[in-house]
Image 1 (tube, rainbow, N blue to C red):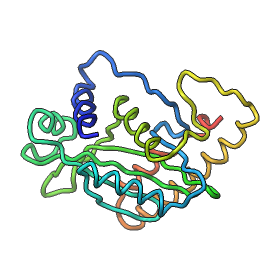
Image 2 (image 1 turned 90 degrees about the vertical axis):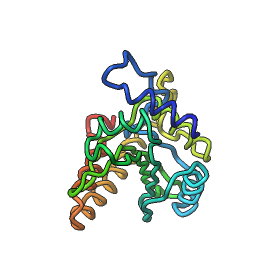
Image 3 (image 1 turned 90 degrees about the horizontal axis):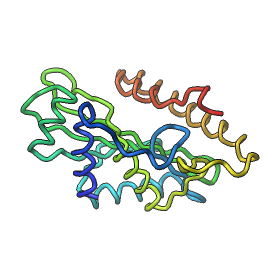
Image 4 (image 1 turned 45 degrees about the vertical axis):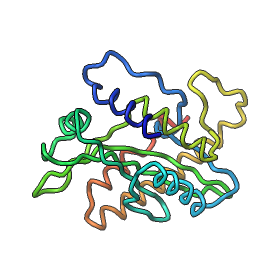
Length: 212
């Protein structure tokens, strides 16, 4: 995974200049890597994610019943310099890549959606942040969820058409449930004075036009 991360970061850093990114292998309702863990609970799923983070040299920054956030410092060198150029902030700082796993209980199953961003100190103000999810990283994180035991649930491969029309009605219900939780998280973050986190949650909401 460490090697995968380095290759992903190297390819992503040239987003503005590189000709193309690999296609996203799995399209999801949220537009982010996601999976459904069957017949389990949030505590168990978060323990799997936490173990994965720790086993791959990441730090657990934050954990609550609705999310777990891990981070990894970008190694000093060309990649860290390029990351600073992307995110801004202290040119001598130590940029991190952050991984937020939002966990939502849906009956006997748990839905997990992953968001990532770059973050760099910007003294004396708050850290600079910028969303960061190149296609190669999207595909790797999707694979990680599957390796942890998730299945694709209502999501489907980019080259696969739905085979059972009857399954469609459950998708808006699941998506709206996720949107409701994200709105609640945004409201809680705003109440705590963290407007940036609130905006990040709101940005994750799937528009109504994309739910069908």
